[in-house]
Amino acid sequence: MKNTPKEEIRKIVEAQREFFRSGRTLDLEFRKENLRALKHAMQKWEKPLADALWQDLHKSYEEAYMTELSIVLGEIGNHISNLKRWSAPRRVCTPLKMFPSRSKVIAEPLGCSLIMAPWNYPVQLLLNPLVGAISAGCTAVLKPSPYVPNVSRVMEEMIRETFAPEYIAVVQGNREVNTALLEERYDIIFFTGSPDLGRRVMRAASEHLTPVVLELGGKSPCIVDKDANIAMAAHRIAWGKSLNAGQTCIAPDYLLVHSEVKERLIKALKNEFEHLLGKDPQKAKHFVRIVSDKAFDRLTGYLKDGNVRIGGTFDREERYIHPTVLDGVKEGSPIMQEEIFGPLFPLLTFNTTEEAIEFVTKREKPLALYYFGENGKNIAKVLKHTSSGGACINDTIMHIANENLPFGGVGHSGMSSYHGRESFRVFSHHRAVVTTPTWLDLPFRYMPYKFFGMVKKLL
Image 1 (cartoon, rainbow, N blue to C red):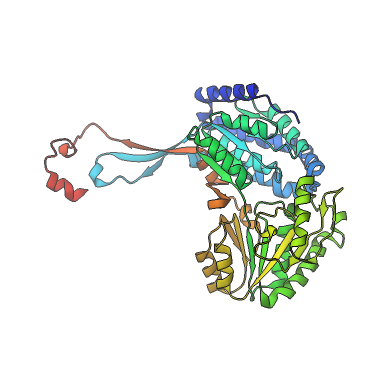
Image 2: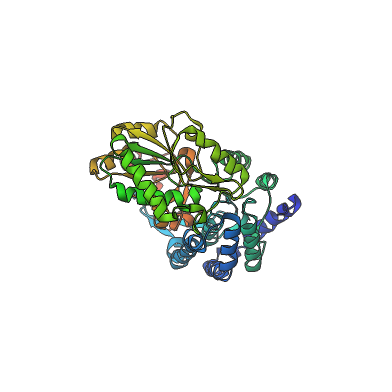
């Protein structure tokens, strides 16, 4: 994949700023037409995109459609159906002290956007924010990941065929290109990736006071309490960790299991991994490979941090790692210090729900939190005393599937959120407007502040 030259990047950004100033993106029908164009493009390019996902990640068509293509298509449909309502001016109450004025909030596009996507869900995480940018009336510079070159190439071809570059364009390349991109001025930067890269994006954005959306990650805990339905918990946890081979920002990162049910859960997880992927997941059609040799070496290095209870085998040539559960893991071990982003599951135990809550809250706020248990008071306690971007009770991953829920991080796991109406909002500025008629002009607000005693009672 060739790096887009720095001068070309500058020309693209200047052209997009000029295009935005023309006012064409302000028209709602223009936005809807381009949402429909993106939908048509995705339908036309479905097979090339799916083939590229298989080439780069060994991602099956079924998983590609379920976790990437269908999510974007659903997002497009939601925006087409609701854009008129979302963009309508919103009347708000005006206090008596401002009579006879009226107040409203109008949504206006922020302008030129930069959208930077990672490699793990390279279609969904580039195009889902794009839907919000189009819907809000922004232009967009898209930066896919160089770690999935086939997907990035197909995406560039699809976007080039569908949109004029002064409206939506793709820029390709490595971190040098990222640096060049971040030297330009945008009206919003939408970044999905690691906290370390998120800090760099935020530092660069601060030079121009550019607002940022940071969708990061972190160590999302999976708590299994003693009253959990172990069979169902294992079924849903194994699926959440197997999806994309654990290379999911909201994958359950580590297991925090009540000591009384630990052995039952390990046995159930072994059965569920086999049920999902067969006795030899390396031969499974639906099990993704690790994205790079560097990531593979990092992951296999974690195997020494505990005792292997499930899995533990790997094949570097294929970048395959068997879904693995590690017992006897110490809190300070390397596998517990950073997001795993792979099919490895360190397992730690607790004896009370309060102990599990304390373990979670001593660490950075995660992107997701998963709790398995049936006691309503314990569920309420966990939700009240922990913080995370999103959460599931007795499930994993599925909060991302509801477009009516905001998706985003908090603290170390990100800032701001998107999906559905939130995507429209995040690419918009919400402008406060007060309209005051001229047929009446009450004198009390003007100097020398006559009738102040009466006015004071109104304020």
